[in-house]
Image 1 (cartoon, rainbow, N blue to C red):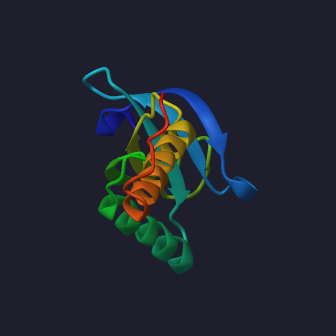
Image 2: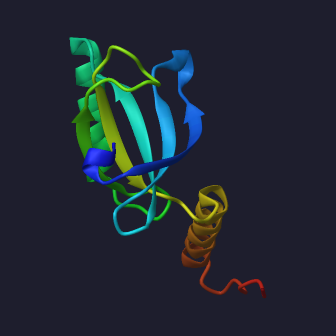
Length: 124
């Protein structure tokens, strides 16, 4: 990954069946990012990986970690004898579950107030 400007800091996780790994990396500017590595060996792997790239690159939502880029690398010691697709994502510095819960509660409150505009809004 160094040839693409990313230095691995640590392993964050591993997918089911050892098919993917997730790393915390530092980019050339010193920013922490996350790289998910997906196997790129068979037609099914390639099709599934490209579906994930298209989906992630099209999503924009406060509760979804932003996709930044992807690139293909030759096999690595962690996944020998395979080509690997690397998906680079922003590193999430906040708890997305809490953020999504807050957004949902605000939305539900707005829906409730629209249905009953005379309802008193709870005090924080």
